[in-house]
Each structure stands twice: as structure tokens, then as C-alpha cells.
Image 1 (spheres, rainbow, N blue to C red):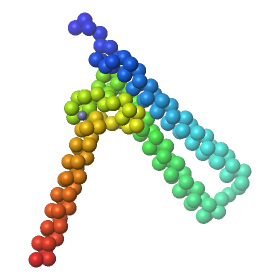
Image 2: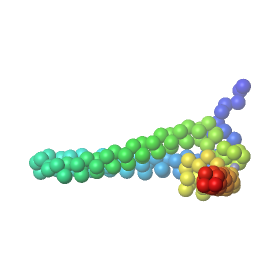
Image 3: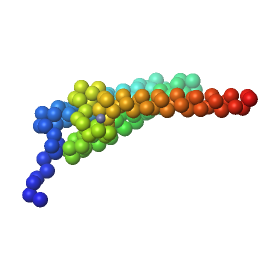
Length: 150
Ligand SMILES: [Zn+2]
């Protein structure tokens, strides 16, 4: 094989550049948000030592706050991992294509949902199928309930 694999594979160069831009912008947003948070935590930490020892209520409140902050940072870290994966898939030429039908997922959709793996049509079809399934399950449990009464 003498053909060199181009980034983005068969993908149109403009689309490749646009998708890359969307992902990298998202990554930058998250990184700066995380850096801000870390800086906030550090500043607060410095303040609390100058104010002396916190009483128990304040401490537990601070603990809860810390836990929330930590959960948020962890969530962002997970999103970052997803972005890294998406960028890798973009290089491989598999990002931005519908998992179900293989059609290109629209840029508009990817801008709103960068990790969408299905096109709008397939996602809607899937939601309808899931709703139907839920309805059937509900009906199933309802009839079971009636059986038990009878
Ligand atoms: Zn599709």
C-alpha cells in the first residue's frame, strides 16, 4: 500500500477543519474552567488559614462544597477524555459519522452535541423505539398487577 493515510480519511477538508475546531474550542473552554476552579480553591485555602480554625458547621459546609467542586472537576475531566477520544477518531476518519447508518452527522448537531454518535434521524428513531419499549414495559407491569389482584 503506497497510499498514505490522510488525517480525516475520506472526509472533506473543510468539514475536518470545522469539526476539529469545534472539539478544540470545547477542550479549551473546559481547561480554562478547570484552571479557574483550581485557582479559586487555592485562594479559598489561603484565606481559611488566615482566618484561623473553622467551627464544625463551617467545616462540614466547606467539605460539601469541596465535594461538589471535586465532582464538577471530575465531570470536566471525563468530558476532556471524551474530547481526546473524539479528536483521535477524527484523525482516524471515523468521527462525525452516524453509528447506525454511516451518514455524516451535521455540523450543527455536532456543535450542540460534540459526542453524538448518531445522526438526527437515527437518534429520533431510537428515541421512539425506546419510548415504545418503556410503554410496553409499563403495560406489562400493569397487567401483572391486575393479574395479582384477580
Ligand atoms: Zn443515521
